[in-house]
Image (cartoon, rainbow, N blue to C red; front, top):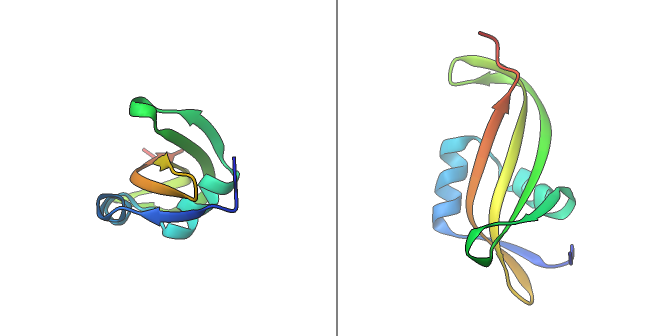
Length: 91
């Protein structure tokens, strides 16, 4: 993986991030240091867990996993969507 590549965000990805609780910084860090794996349609996914210990939609969670789906181009990664999974929620 070329960690020097620029990271660009589609409008769809930015909207998802706002709705799902991920920041641009978390997504970029996930792409640069997270676990990389193939995704559908020739895309790539990256995963990284972050300590969270905060409230999200009325529940407290200990961690969250950020998973951007990207298209790798020769000089950049284009983030097409972002999934966020909250972990360790109190019942």
